[in-house]
Amino acid sequence: MALAAIATVGIAGVGIAGVGIAGVGAAQVAEASIGVGVQANPVRLAGAAHPGGSYPLPALFVENTGTQPESLTVQVKRLAGDTGLAFPASWIQIGAVGGTLKPRQQALVSIRLVPPADAKPGSYRDDLVVTGTAGTAVGNVRFGAGATTPLEFSIAPGPAGGGWLGLPAWKWWLIVALGVVAAVTLVVRRTGLRIRIETGGPYA
Image (cartoon, rainbow, N blue to C red; front, side):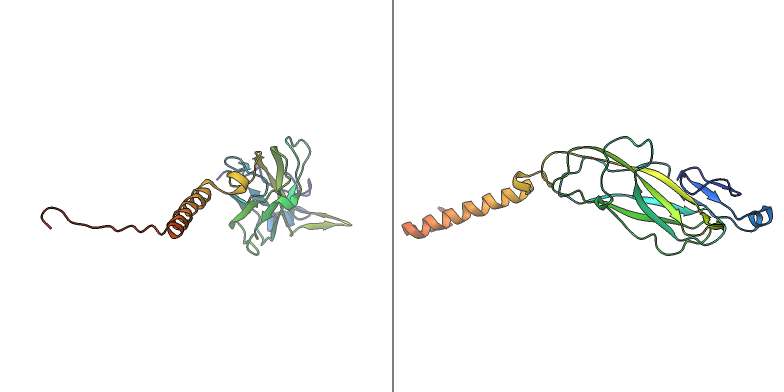
């Protein structure tokens, strides 16, 4: 799987945008480095969501690209240049990465979309930002590593499930069938009608 661009360099930049930062000095760079990798393709919902529903998104692929153990966190953030409607981070449920990752260890992180009942229709886009806890402190500034990939989905009008009053069509067919059975039973009981079924033929 393709990863967002990752670099392991001396202190040359800060976290976001998939930049790994090594320790201070050439000797430290040779000994240890930190880095975070994430899939290059966007995490995108196939089809449209509906307000009030719950939708699993494709799992997010992450990797510790450094040479020392790393604990990764995933957050929803809106970065400069994002297009599409913004949305609160509470719409996204992010699973745990799964503890500390060893160097070059990979993991899949579960992602779920839960738009509220009052979510407006439209196309939404933010970013999933993966950051590591390991880093290098220089004075009062701490340098770390991070990477990002887009998160995209659309919301269509109407309640979740696509059925009338929020119920899927098969439930309404079941309700209608049960109603017919109940009506027939009531008519039979009130009229005293009895139905007798006999089997047989000319040779019985």
